[in-house]
Length: 159
Ligand SMILES: CC(C)(COP(=O)(O)OP(=O)(O)OC[C@H]1O[C@@H](n2cnc3c(N)ncnc32)[C@H](O)[C@@H]1OP(=O)(O)O)[C@@H](O)C(=O)NCCC(=O)NCCS
Image 1 (tube, rainbow, N blue to C red):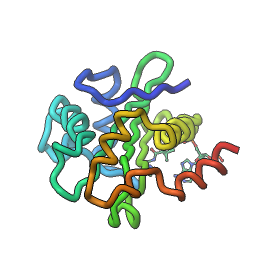
Image 2: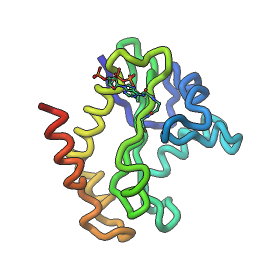
Image 3: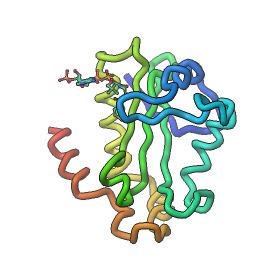
Image 4: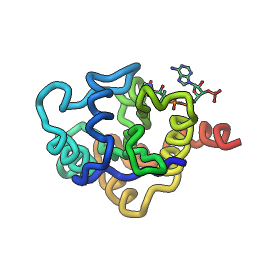
């Protein structure tokens, strides 16, 4: 079983090891500012919190929520980045969801479950999430909604 926890300034067990492993990124999943030496882990989790808030972002950047994926023992096995909407750049490269599973934990179904939970978040985001995203003017109000592509994808995924 996997549960997703929204990133906060609390550092769960296994997070340091996960972020070490993410390093500079893999297969399109971007690296972190810990890897580049710009941030400590503590500063990085604060950054993850800050980028959920459009008011704290540079113009043109899309708000994003980061989730840690925890196993039954409460240890982090992976992470998910969920963009609240897409701009033109993300529509071509990046998309709504990025996810990463620790290498020794791969092939056990964690990735699939994390993707399922992330898609649920996109389809049924919490009310305050909607307010935050629809308030953005970067790419128009339509783009604040999950794209029809995601809705079509999730239907086939959930079959
Ligand atoms: C992609 C990733 C998250 C999958 O995690 P995982 O826990 O191993 O995934 P699962 O065990 O749930 O496997 C899901 C399915 O994807 C397949 N799969 C996993 N990695 C794959 C890969 N690199 N290429 C092709 N298929 C892959 C599995 O075989 C499985 O297929 P099945 O259901 O038909 O058996 C993991 O390999 C990873 O972190 N990769 C690096 C980052 C990345 O590529 N992220 C995705 C882009 S942002």
